Image (cartoon, rainbow over all chains, first blue to last red; front, side):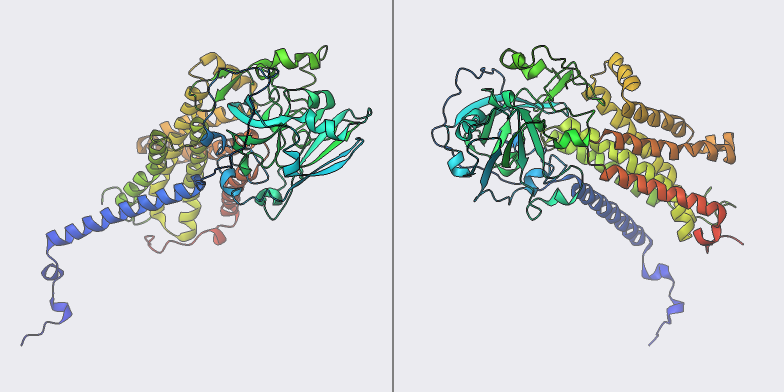
Length: 323
Length: 216
């Protein structure tokens, strides 16, 4: 029996040349495909945000908006977009990621304390507070300072109805809203991108304006966490960030309260922050906006189109200086 | 192998397949972006997402191209130089797409508005300047240009990549609203590469591994 030693075997005897070339081609093909898939996964890892199926509970007996609220003949933004494109920095600074990060946010039990310069300071249980006045559907334009906008069918009632209950004192000139700051539930509170807790404020006459509402719902259902559950402020003629979310405290005060975005960028985010196409953000123009769902740009309207209702609040004021 | 060996880098591996793999892989992010766009999976604001993503990819590829030289010296793998041009050109390519998203989706090709933006908005000025710097670099990326300019001049010119990368980081830093963590991360990456260059100039002993394949 002839036993060949390893040295005696030519490699060409073991592997046929065409087979060898085939194998090389196969390995290269597999390497290409494998690495492309891996790159794809890396891309997906950095760009996807985890899907969340959100649905609120139906709110009973939602009333039509009262005549004070101007009707709007623009299409409402889809629920999916309203609930998956959110600025809620306590959860994440990535708008696409907030819904996922907020999905386990607990909104019951929940209390809202109304205090400061009022006759009857009081801590409300959220379910009692939401019953102060019948829920109304308010379809408002929503203009973000970042140049995008939506049309949102909120469910809520005028803030004035809550203030009726606590009776502000005559010294009260301003009102401040404070968002919950719970490190256990809000993953981005560890960062110092803003001064926590988030505080926003209004002049008292702005707060009492019939268009200013406290919203607990969206599209006829209770708010999902990413949109500010269980209770948020909506001031449709101001940039979106004025609408404090997940409110736990409301204070009536004499002096203009310090507010989070104003502290973060005093030249960029004024206390008033009324939507104003004539006053540019120092870094970008505010003349136009992208309506979510549309490809082109729309002209931004002064007071977000609510000038007829609210312009008198600012008569005689220089809106460029008081931005 | 033709032109793969050179006195400067020593014996070169045949890197053509690896280059091809990089060519394919670098196109994956854009392909997925296009795919997601077509299937309406870019979220509520697709144009913003596309602009942001292509901007980040531009920075990423510029930084990868700048990382080639330090890596090849530290690891003693001279053939890695073969990847630099490709990565740099991809940086330029993603920069073009990034610019296109702005010119198209944000300005709708209104030239006057763009000029106004460039002159009035510092972050646009810086971004545009960084992009313009990449143009001569892309144009002189060929083997021919290296020969024509001569290695020294060419190297000097291509140090502009650092300026463009720093410009890109500043552009990103200036445009975010409050969360500066990501642009700072890119800034740190560029800074590390620059520090390597300085160390390499003065103490090459600690920054280089003599390539084992280097011809004696």
